[in-house]
Length: 284
Image (cartoon, rainbow, N blue to C red; front, side, top):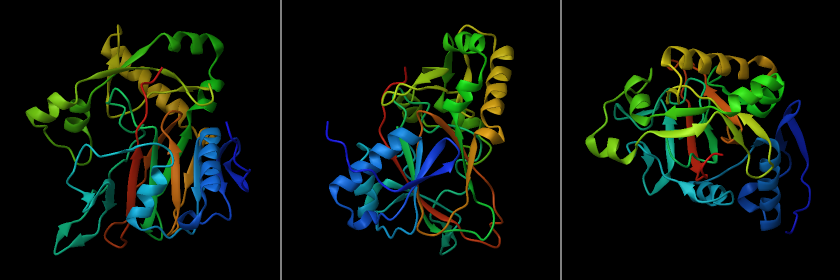
């Protein structure tokens, strides 16, 4: 397999993530883009600053990682680009043009699917002067920090994820599902300890929002365990806080991270992000 030339990078935080320097994605050649993807697979998240990307360029870049995943909820996808979901508090003629406060709470995207998305990409169009950060937790480092006996105990556990549970109990944007939506999104079951298919590393892989329990465990015990593991994995020592600048592209690997958005003063500031997902595979 051909290996792309190394790129200039620096870590987002010690042992996690990479900021890729001196790359203009809109004009990058195929070898450079291959290097970007390789850097992503090695580091769990990548950041490229100062980008100027139209919707077609964003979809093209996402396609370097795999096949873009369209969104479950179509209401706030971009006209002509169903792969792009609008995250914003901006309104036009008094009507929201995107989803607001989406993604608040530690989670991994599409964990309610048999094949959760492999990566999430955010492109910053407009950012508040304060707040609205994105936090990424390195769940490989969290797993490595667990005692060996707990690693072994957790490796035998299977987590029950449910889109219906998520949609009807979430704090923001709660809604009831149609019969068709329920039929299209049956409950799924994933390992609590996940193996990364590209590099073989193991990650602690709980989530919030979609999790109903652990197979074979009383919910009264299972949900507190999940909460404890999320709290453990999102300690400051494992977390990178991204403070946005216009033109940032941040891509993170859902196979080995949890993430959350943070709130901001939406009466003073407008925040607009374009979000894309890339299809993944079944966790193991």
